[in-house]
Length: 270
Length: 278
Image (cartoon, rainbow over all chains, first blue to last red; front, side, top):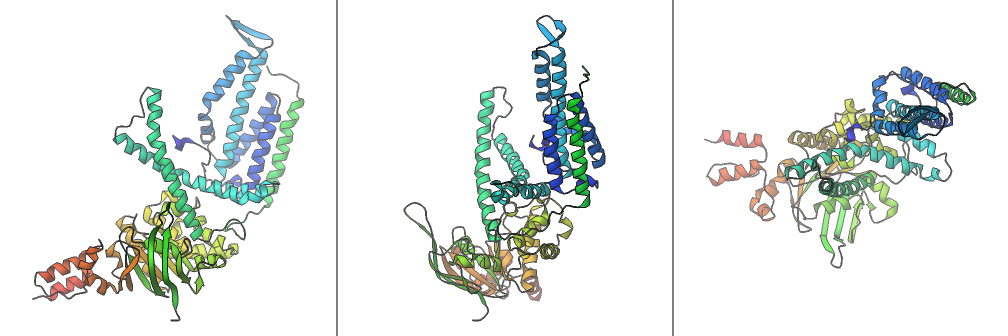
């Protein structure tokens, strides 16, 4: 179940997007999110979609892979679709019994669904094209520039990378504990929800105990390897902006201006 | 002596646990020379792991002095230099790896030392080659076997160019193949001049050591070459330690009246001794 999470899933290809500096990709994603919320009508979402499709094509990642991220939130998307469709007041289009579907409702639900799909597939493009280690390095470099947070940028990125490092280890551990408890008669499939929740207690307790044990061991191993915080620490790989990053920034800013410009389109599709 | 790298003088250590502290080490004095391969054995609770942690200032002695490469571990000024001189490989490889990519993990030590990026690069490459894991440098650690992971952690330690490496039961969680690989690397490092201190309870693994120190109840019980130590299998049994199978077999044959010389430690030696029988 944890294996389905697309965040942190890296899909290696030799595209130019993969070669971009992680900072460029993080900043581009942030801008993309902001402008997605600034878009006020369907033309804005079409513009964002066009931008995203171009990015996906350049990245050489199969479309199905990008859309996989949406699978986990299909339910949420459907919910927003239905709620917006049924409960938006406005000019009535159809009336079926007590339910009235309005013009505004149709437009709002389509907009919301598009926004969610674009948001999720857009952000997963960042994780699909960037190895986690580069992402955390990029975050560290960017956080360093933020006032107040800059002082702890090393700590934040160290925590993130350790968390990512231990996800597979703890998943394996959970699997092992689950099998051990099942073999002793634990019931994880009971239809009774109280029973099922109770079944998870003997999973979580040993998992936490072992996580603490691991944390303790890791801290000692890190100290033994001369770890003493971010001060005086150097890195194997240093981030450096290339010409392609400057081009990418220009392209992204241009695209964002395009998305923003759609606010002034008054022609309504629905 | 001039080439002493590690010296413990009347060291005691107690764990604080409530009102009654537990004494893990009691008046231990050991000295280890540069380039030696020393094995420290003892049953659980004999204080051998505590001893290991004292050697690179992860723990500080309650009494006595620990000198590593001439530096006193109780002086915080020395801590980093001591850990650089005397590195440590632990038991569980999973719990020692920091990074999500093999080469980044090996780079962790040199990065902490503040080396220039190109220097880190050369050290990472040479360390990975030394443990025969260079082709795995871009892999994720969780995709490797236990033995391979332990080789990576050893590479991470080699990359700091230590004079001395402490292996704290580093073979205990590995399968036989991983154990053999790790042991081979330990001997290779020792041949290159690195002092190796190997803490274990597998007697089979230490027949090639220069010296064995037997611990029991926080004290050094015995000290000597493998031949000397394994000659007294009764004494080892009292400490709940065995002797290697080859030694045990040799002892049995000798009891049965066959002429097997004492101090036969390896399979080859035993085979030869048996073939010489008439």
